[in-house]
Length: 84
Image (cartoon, rainbow, N blue to C red):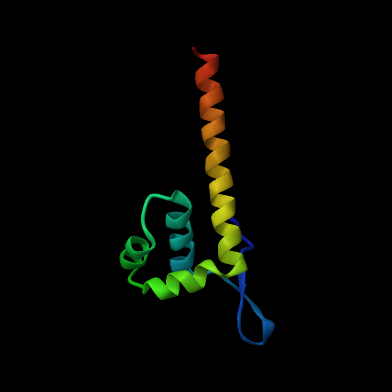
C-alpha cells in the first residue's frame, strides 16, 4: 500500500519492509487469520510475526491497509444505496 513504509535497521538507518513483511501486513489487516496461521503461511515463527507487529512501519502499513479497505467498503455501501 504505502511506498515509503520503512523500518529502522541497525545504527538508526531506515530500510523498507520486506516482501514477507508486506504480505504479513496484508494478512494481519484482513483480520481473517490467526497470528499462527499467518506465520505458518509465510514460513516464519509466530515470534517473528509478533516482532514485526511492533515495528512502527509495519503497524503503519496495517493501519493504511485497513483504512483503504474501510473506504472501499463505505463507497460500495453508498453506491448500493444509490441503486436501491
